[in-house]
Length: 199
Image (tube, rainbow, N blue to C red):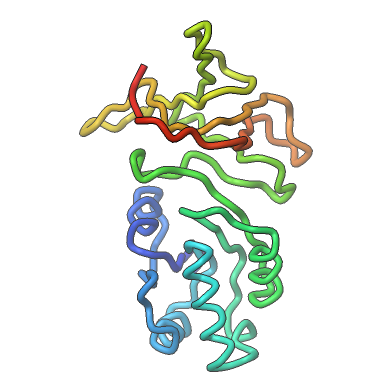
């Protein structure tokens, strides 16, 4: 089945909104059972928290050191937590597949951006969100530069978010990526710890 994904329950909901069929694995998935499911309906994409996927991969190695030969994973997507360089290398080595980081938020209940093969910033999904940079001193917002991230969510009728502050310090650039995409890219610089609000 082309485009079938293995993912946890939170990620699964976002993927199903995109029309991608999902095998629900989740953090609590027992590796040997999950392996049987994956053999019967082989996924081509994996979406996982890196910490839980690390445990999942280690347990699969214990069951079968050559487990990656049984699957043809095209890409692994890391969500929900920071992906370290060592984790990326380990996943790519063990699964014989490329690993990409994605960004999003529980508050927004969706992905807001993802890496390309150049791994240089998150390409932002501007069809669903408006991303701005907020300057606390001037009280102004701009489409690019460095400062506090501001997000407006399109299409969320149940809980509209207009100029929402997720409390992330970021840099946004519209400079064309070496991969050829011209969508804006974002890099995280630091977190702010005060209460979240809208402006």
